[in-house]
Length: 493
Image (cartoon, rainbow, N blue to C red; front, side):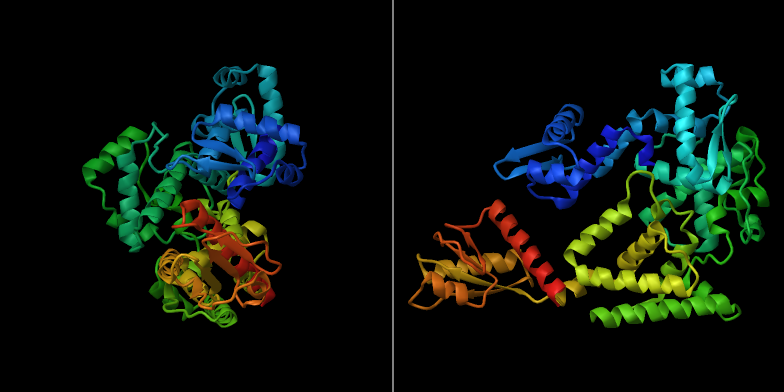
């Protein structure tokens, strides 16, 4: 959907992404080369950031520039600002809430002319072709595949708003909460914070579309028989039906809970296993997932303590690729940014699991679309218990030598501080010899040296000068060097 933004806006988004992803000082030359623009344009973009966004600042020094967010802000705030300022996204949001605008009414809401609105609709429709729906005019409304429309807005509202915001004034939250409580009760599904609010968003959008008489095709209506278990009081049902002029029946429940009543979706592991005993296709897919996990475990020398939940989540992940708002994106590609950081820290592991996921999807007839592969990768990583600690344990500790010309006790103090700040990352020794030279330091088998006096540049290793106790900035520099060394070691191995 970036094509709905102006060229300038796309470039500025890439600039912000690059600054955040690198999380370090970057020169104007490096940024200009990455973005394919001149340093003059780059400085214009940075000035725009300073004037427009109050929740982060651009710091500059002789090392270059870097982006620093306020402590309670982050990348999502940038995208929220883009959504708010874009006529294209304002149009799409207005059409979700109200689908009977005339061109003149809609132009007035957007504060643009009717001719400009026609051009905007044509521009948006060119992009929406890939999303399976279009905007019709007079009245202005969304038409096309209902499942695609719903999935688009799952992602849109998930990206634009936080769970602390309820922008849907035409529907009472308590009613949605009651319906969600019913889903949780009858399915015995997990009710953690993230799951609850993701399901709440899906349920609201489904309710909104159903209220406007837009229906999705449901292959399986497995919840229909549970309508009698509806845990909303008769008084609430009567109030609900009167206020919204809707009947709470089997069709209503199936439409509202559409992602969760599709064929072959399972709410718990026992349900999945029971069905696999009578369904060869499901049994075969479970075997492929188990094979995938065994390969990943062996490839990376990591253990899988309890694979039941992981198997369930991986099985369900391909079913939710066009339903779960976390499986795709409109502008903010969270899964790719997450995986890029993982790749930076554990490059070998990343390549290993990506190959295994691709192999699994080929063997089971699933597509290799990047967003779907990344969603499955993300699912595997976050659902695998104690994964990252095991990966970290498998990385060989960085070897550090400490030199102090004050006292041996000062050397031990520095050793204690570094081991405390970077547990399990460093193997720290203290130099106890009497004779020292630059040439001998270069030959010592250490990855870098920490000293309380300046050391001339060495050919084969870095050195860090810490006069007394390390500052936060010095510790940050050491962490950066640890990352560089560990990444090189992984790539070499």
